[in-house]
Image (cartoon, rainbow, N blue to C red; front, side, top):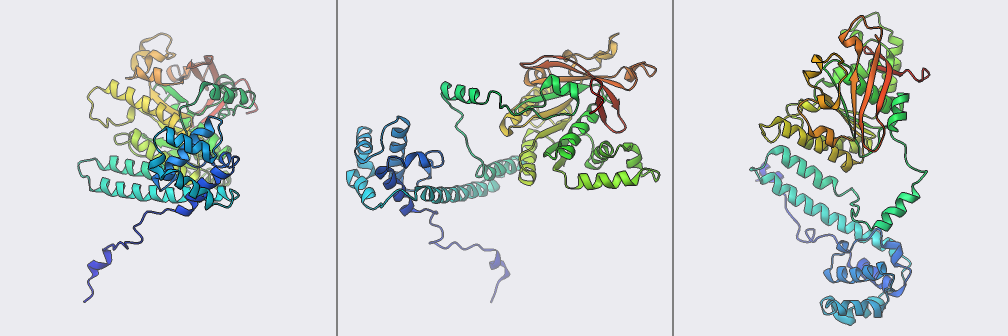
Length: 449
C-alpha cells in the first residue's frame, strides 16, 4: 500500500554519491604542463591545486606551480627533482607516475578546456560540501536562527565569488598603483557640485557619515543621493531604512524625481500634477533600487550583509549603500554599554564597505549639547553616543540650517554641508539651496545642476 510519507523520503543512489571529478582531465593537464613549457601561463591564474580531486595530482601541480613562479621550467626532470627534494616523489607514485602522465598526453592544445572541466567539478564538490554544512547548521538548535541563515548565505555566495589573494609583494602593489595613475575610477557623483569637488565623489571601500540634529535634513540628503544614483544614473542602490517604512521612503524619492511635495503625494492630494507623477512612475519602476525597511530594533550588521548579498543577486554590484540611521540599530549582543556597541557597529559598517567594495553612507544623530551653544553649527565632537564613529569614518559631513533655529533667518532655504573630516583630503563647507519638501539640494556654486 502506498504511503504518502514515503514521498518525502530522499533516497541516495550510491553511484550518484561519488563526488564529481574528472581524472582524465586532471591527467591531461599535468601531462600538458610536463610536455609544453608554454602551457603553464595559460592556466596559472584560473586553476588552483586544491581543484584536483586526486591528492597526488594536487602535489604534482603544486610543484609545477612553484617552479613556474620561480621562473623555472616545468619539464619532467625539473618537476621530478623538486618532488624528490621535498620528499613527495614516492607519495605521488614515483617517477613512473610522472612518465605515465607524459606518455598518455598527446599535446597541451586543449589545456584551457581541461582546466575549466576540473574547476567545474571542484565547484560542484564545494557545493555538495556547503550543502552538507548547511544541513548541519539547520540541526544545530543551540545557534540563533539569524546566525544560521547568515552563515548559510555566506557559504552559498562564496561559491560564486572570486577569492583574491590578499597577500602581495610590495613591487606588485606599486606596479598596479603606477599603472592606474591617470586612470583612477572617479567616485560616485552626488550632483552637488561643490561637494563632488571637495570629496571627489563617494569612493568605494569608504565609510561616509552624515550627521545632524533630528529634522535638519539628513534623510532628505540620503533620498537625494539614492535618487541621483539609482534613478538618474541607473546604478544599484541598497537603502536600509531603519526609521521610515518603504512606502514613506518611496514617496520621498518619488517627490524628489517629480518635484511634487512629498506630503501631497502621501496624503493623496487630488490637485497634484499627475502627468509628472506618471512620468516618474515610468522612470522609477525599473530602477535598481533595493529598499530594506527592517526595524532598527532588529537590524544589525549581519542583516545588512545579508541584504547586500540579496540585492547584488537581484541588481548586480551596488554603487552605494545607505543606512538611515546608525543609532537606531539594535544591540545584537545584549551589551549594556551602548557607546561600545555603537563603536562596534560603526567599525562593522566600515568593514562592510571594504568587503563589498562600495561607498557606505550612514546617517547619525548628534547630541543635544549643540543647542546650548551660541553658534549652533555642529562639530565632530557632537556625534551622539559614539566616539569610535569618528575613527571608523573616512569622511564626516555635518548638516546645519540657520532657519532650523531662526525662522526669520536671512539664510532661509540654505543648508550647509560641513565636511569636518576627510581622511587624506581637505575639509570645508558646502552651501546649498535646500527644498525639504522634495529633497532637492542645489549647489550655490553652480546653478545649472
